[in-house]
Length: 322
Ligand code: PAP
Image (cartoon, rainbow, N blue to C red):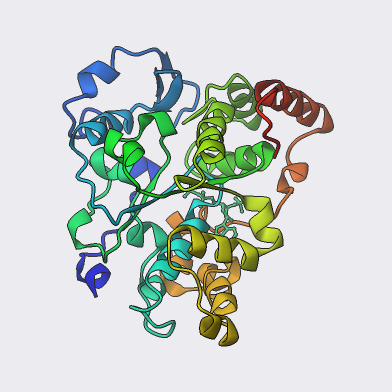
């Protein structure tokens, strides 16, 4: 099994991620000249072509644009961080490779979804060691980059892209929990930066709208999914996902409950309780609560009104609502 052949290397925690100076990228000099925001403490973010990206990741994204070797069978899963990426990766990987791997002997029982579906941005930034050549075919590849930052071949070829978005306030709360486990950025500070659009991969509304717009104009290119809808009806989402990537469930599979089995296999409780994900503090932020509307426990009504108003303004005329 190709995934098993790879050397399992722990995913780095924030504190273990090498600094830009230690990372390998010929684009780092360029990145260091870009506008900077230091407020996120974990790492600076730099502004490039309208978007803010971690300083240590952006050189990798620029390198990826130049050297990415596309396989015609590639499938891309894209999202803003904390939008349900881990879930989408698990589902897509399981659906695509369902004839290869049985549920009882499956890579996801031994590897975190991010090891089965690498984040291209981090791989090209040298932040994770992942040999893209040994992934089972078709490769499922992840990214947090805006659509406009994707390698040209990904945009111009038939490569399908699945995008998952999540309600802004829940993304912020999930994101802040991930960061606060590693540094002490106060929630209010994170909130203000978020509102100003100065958040990693933000402004988040622009990120969502880029993919949303493509999904409207080219339904074969981008499948646009919403976390809340998936939580509400995962069977429907999984069925759409399988149809979109060209491996629909057969009548026989439906009769044998394969769709339900995929949903259960990739469910929050199932993944969270696996040893590979459980006994590993760095996975805590990947499997935290998975509750729609958890923001209500952290964001005051006044803050919610402010962020909702900004969201409404930023999405105005786009036709998109969360
Ligand atoms: P990442 O950007 O670090 O990869 P990502 O997977 O996008 O994180 O988002 C993590 C969120 O998805 C967590 O939300 P929370 O902080 O509000 O709890 C996590 O709990 C949730 N999540 C992870 N796996 C699943 C799943 N199988 N089903 C539903 N939600 C999930």
